[in-house]
Length: 366
Image (tube, rainbow, N blue to C red; front, side, top):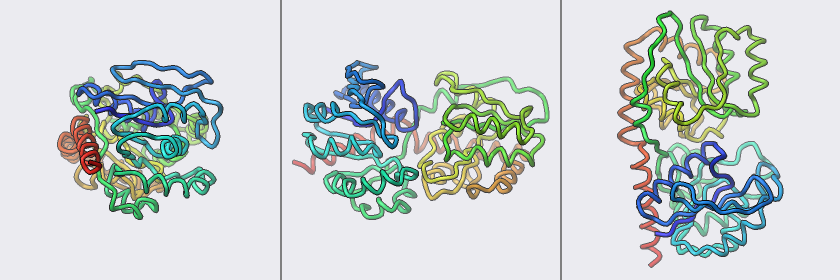
């Protein structure tokens, strides 16, 4: 099968969608499919590279407006490709418009990763185009039933939606181990881009009520300076550690070293939370927030962890305290989380399900 993925960025750029596209494309190529990714370059030069069996076209970028890379070359390359399936990864308005105007694929699939939340101008201007794109799309992949039920866009297109959760390779997280320090501190971990919707500020507020809790923050991003300053304002410097961005091969040991994983996101921009899968694969209980998205689909309250309201420091502190004081509960939730990842959220299962979607739409097209 000849497959073309379209998204704004690709490795070495890292992020939730970027990482997903890379994992999916490489896994499809490993299964013998001809896979290309069309993304934008970081400069005004177009170049093509073979990365782990995937042909990646980095189309020249002119400028970035409203978080959207602008590339005229993108349209030319869409027009030049004749895949069996073009797989769009929303939201990237320019890529979707390029496919709408110039695409020549036999079938079109779109993974709806998230509503456009913060960029209100982009959302308003793009809505008419988005409706045209979705009307032409053969199948819309949503990553959780929660998002289909609560998205103002997807509720109108439920008849086209199929649920394919994101997946990971759990093995590195299951194998990792560390030697724990013998002290009375509970070790809490956060992993993610330090962006406005991640809720780390709420987690810091909760930490004020938890004097025996140490927090490790893995990741970097635009909110890092503000959140570092907040740590000092709250006199938490001795109990909060920023370690920056960590290489993928080093990440499992951070999960292994923690007692509790917390994803305190505050906005619907957190559509799924793959980091929860990583923590669950490591056998750790998860605390997340109820956003009406995939966070509480992945982490089931009372089964694999706890779910609390967003932007609620006291509720978050109470959940951390509950797990901190009950090692038996932590072990039970962690074991259930590991089993849930194996049953529902492996990379192999995700790739198989997506390829089945491709086959279905191609067969329907015949």
